[in-house]
Image (cartoon, rainbow, N blue to C red):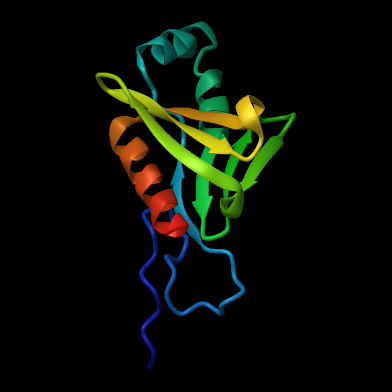
Length: 131
């Protein structure tokens, strides 16, 4: 009996044992629940949490995605081959990532806020694919 690849903490397989053409999720996170979020939870009676969990930052072996929205869903995607620079911005507890692609100043995408640990893990996942 062949061993299956270990699942990621979010349930997606992490790389081994897949046909070469498959897209594999390497990292997935939702926005950090920083202190201003708690105020939004109170004001919206918890409905803000649904929106926060529906926003996702995803890195695959082919691209970086940013999904958001509950009713009006949107998705942005940047192929890894177009990325030129990955910059981490961190504060006390949370931060964000700036992705520069071949588009000049308009080619900078900011993804966050995320907890600092997620910022590091996301940047490492992207850097690992760019090498």
